[in-house]
Image (cartoon, rainbow, N blue to C red):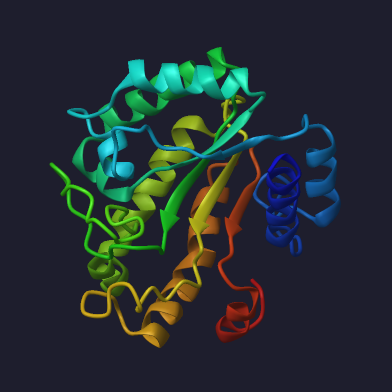
Length: 254
């Protein structure tokens, strides 16, 4: 597990560092050499995906009514005792739309707790996996026999399919990244988890058609990188791919 996570993060960073652009160093895509240099300065990275035991998804983790810093502190203390020093933690665009100031405060509180336990998280902005119809408020209980039955996508299918909602997504990305762009408590930004996941087998009625979803994500993903880069974060940006061969459907790397 230790070797897997460390190699996984390194592979993500190199995959994201394809070529530099004509922009300045702070806003250019990292080169492979820069990604390797950054990685060489890190400790041996040990961690996992993280969500508190009382939360069924990222919305329940972060909403004011269910955010539980005491539980998080306890669980991260356990992680620290096992030698973990990073966690991959998912955010959600609806949380920013609901209460940007409150969401930012809770992220800061989480980072304070994590820092106390010498854990630097990788924060995930978007995710193409599982329920494509996310909603704020109370979340439904787990469905017996269904893997990850409460997890939700960000953005949901409706927002992904509607270009008129994309400015809200940009506001979310730039609001969160902008607030923590110089924050050394954050290890990295994973701007989109498994962007090639069509997910149709789990939610065939609710999910966008496979080719349509992949095309829309493939168009939006480079924009998300650019939105984040405009804030000049000191942390690296990456995207955790689901299937490498899916990239061929999107054309050349951008």
